[in-house]
Length: 636
Image 1 (cartoon, helix red, strand yellow):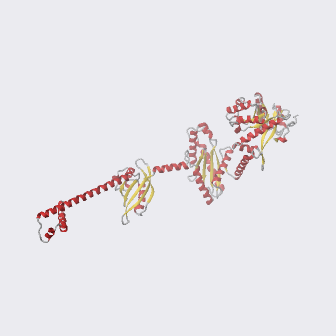
Image 2 (image 1 turned 45 degrees about the vertical axis):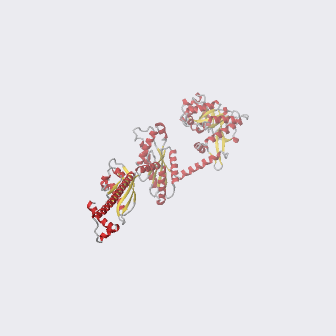
Image 3 (image 1 turned 120 degrees about the vertical axis):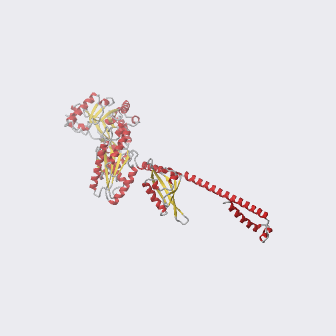
């Protein structure tokens, strides 16, 4: 405002002020009395001074308000620039009106270079189109948009993911004047979530789906098969004897081969099917939509399984250093449709079929059928009953006599029998493998040992029976127990049995497990007076050099060789050689499974002096056993 303007306003205020509050002489002058010139000057000076002071005060307030607004703007800018999110405002024509520091850093441009530009000027065409689509929803339809948006940084092709919230800014009349957006970088969070997802649902070694994801997808396929009645298949794939690779060539080499197997299997699997790794060397393939006909579905599943076997066989050639051992696989297949199975039954049936394939020698495939299920359930019920057999006193010892070259009884072999209340007499070949599998063989084995020792002690008090021996079979599981020697010694002391009348029968396979440890155990037991017999000699792979170092007392020739001595020159040669070998090692030799007089005569002629078999007596309960008479007439 110029000085002249101030003067004019001052005069106007002065006149108004004079009429409003000056002394009476001032008002009188308005009625015609002329005021002295000096009086007017004083009044004007006062008024001008007041107005100048008022103007200065107003100017100071105005400057203070401007400073306050400037400080508030700086504070707001500082706050917005400190936020770890992109904050921006866009006009109705999609141009940037504001962007904070984080937004500038993300696009790699200063804020001044961003203002006035559109997304097409800054981002690639795909990103710009995605942003424009979301912005239109805000500016044209007035929506509040919450969406994930991606951005690829051109400099290093870094991929960013943002969670964006966009809302309209409205005028007083409700019309949209701009868009305000907040975009938070969730790239690291998404990476963590994705990593967590992969750890939860995928195998870390092969990258294949794991058991959890397989079961989720299998549940969906099972439900789908109920609606569509179309067949699906579940294939259990297990590498044969793969643990040998880990043991001989190392875990790292084994892991590399498992990755190669996974890659080769994926090559023959449809994208719509699921190939998963259950763990170790087990894989599962789930195939859906195999048609309505069961035979057609079975043929399709079989073709796929054969391809898988071929892929596994060729996987070891992918490595520059091929595995020294050939690797094959076994596959069990379960078909299901129209509600015939649920997740658990489909998995169980495929596993049963897999076990059948492995039992057939491996490198083959088997389909599940009802007979398999019946066999498995029979075995499960038998195993459950076996757990109660000892407590229910259902186990019995039968004895088979052993005779010398005069057919006089020299001892017996104790053979366990199970008298099941419903099944009757259960053969040992059925329940002994189950007992070894679930370690029930330990309490059963010690029961046999204790019962035999008590019988030895009883015979020691009977005239004519005090020299009889009892041979007891010892399982590998039992023999390798840390307290086995102590348990045997305690049993002998508790029962009062003569250790010299107890014979422990061991197999060649047992001897070859940790040979030095086995030898030490045998030596400790031998010092107690216990004798050892090598059962089923000739059926294993024991070394003669190793055998001569063991405290053995007897070799028992397996029945499979005795059966052929009259007809098969090879069997006859094996038996003759065994007798000669036993004599050279100072060992007794017993022929097992002698069933005819002709076999008995041939064995006598070739130097065998101890026998066991149906010709001399079947295994019998103690009360049925005749021990004082000769087992059969002397051969003529």
